[in-house]
Every structure is written in structure tokens, then in C-alpha cells.
Amino acid sequence: MFDAKETSKKIIEWLKDEVYTANAEGAVFGLSGGIDSAVVAVLCKKAFPNKCLALIMPCHSNPVDAQYAQLVADKFNIETKTVILDTVFDTLVNQLGDDPRAKKLSVSNIKPRLRMITLYYFSAERNYLVIGTGNKSELTVGYFTKYGDGGVDLLPLGNLVKSQVRELAQYLGVPNEIIERPPTAGLWENQTDEGEMGITYETLDKYILTGNIEDEKIAEKIERMKLKSTHKIQSIKIFSA
Image (cartoon, rainbow, N blue to C red; front, top):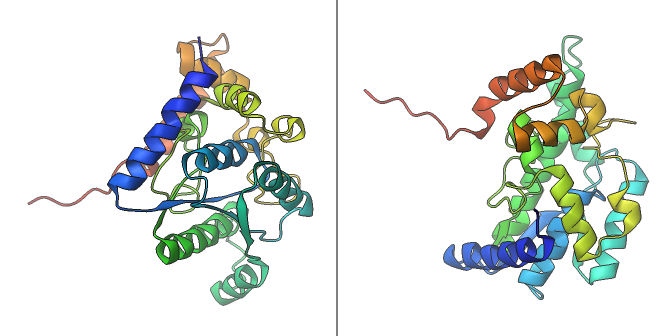
């Protein structure tokens, strides 16, 4: 049985240990208006009350995302900075050229990579570590951008499936409207996590936690996704003579 209270305590202590062991002073993270980043924000605030920074980084994003992000920041008194990346994104895409072969995802993945650059700027400026918001469900099937939202120092939710993150959010007092929002990476208009993955978090979580689901085709799909994204979670391979 998942114990949100105990898990919260353990993550907060783990964050403190890892940050101070690295001779860093606090935490910086992206605040997107979604449940995962909201949970990370509250945990970081509890771990580093005066040394945590939330970056709100719109990049041709739905304005509602920033509103939800600010809602969390206001409720928990978290320092924020807003860095609008629209112009940077447009400039880079224009420099890359209008290649008709470019895939929608390859262009959209520029957004989380620009956010990663921004996070590490403030990380260096303040001597903070970058705290990621990925959860076990996403890590299992590679649902993150390599060197984008996957480019972080610590992943406090990395061993929690999405359903457990929801329980943790409820325990921590994350606003219900954020908990109930359809999860989205905000890569393009009306994009949702479940729509892009082609599988619900409920089904994915069940497979991760039990190793078994009734639909064999879905199980095979999950295994294919895991295999295809193995390179994302492995350390960099170095040639050895």
C-alpha cells in the first residue's frame, strides 16, 4: 500500500541529502501547470524553504498553463521567474530551415530542450541543482525528451507511477483543478500525454506495478516502447578498446 505521508518525508530528506552532498544550495525546476511539476514544486519548497526557484517557461504555450503554474506558486509561496521562449524557439526553427521532412515531434522537442538550457542557466547562477519532474510511468516507456525534460540532476518522482503521484499531490494539498487536468507535455495545441502514447496511465501503471494486463496487444506495445527508448535512460556508452 502506497503511503503518501511517508513517501513525502523520504523524498524531502533525499532531496536535502543529494543537494548538499553535491555542495549545492537549493533547487530549481520547471513549473508547467501540470500535476508532476506541482508535486515537485511543493516537495522542493519543503526541502529548501528559502532556496528554491520555479521557472515558468512558456513556448507558444496555452496561457492556462502559466495560470495554473502561478496558482501553485502562490498557494505555497514559491519564488518564480517567467522566461518566455517564443522568440528563441522561432529563431532557431527558422535557422534550421523549413524542411518538409521534419517531423512534428522533432520540432516540438526543441521546446523542452530550450527549457533545459534555461534551467541550467539559473542552476549555475544560484548554485542550485536542477530537479526533474518525470515519473516512473514516463521513464518506463521513454515518454520524455532526451536532453530536454530528461536533462536533469535529480528525479524525485522517478520511482512513482502516475497514480502514486496523484495520491502524493492530494496529500500535499495541490489544487484539485491541477490534479484533475488531463496530463500534457504542451508540445502542441490540444496535445495530451495519453493521446500521444496511445495508452492510458491507468493501464500503464497497472502493467508496471503488476506485470500483467488483460490486453496482450497493449502489453506488447508497452514492451516495444520500452525497447525503443532504452537509449534514453542508459548512461552514455563509451568505446573501450
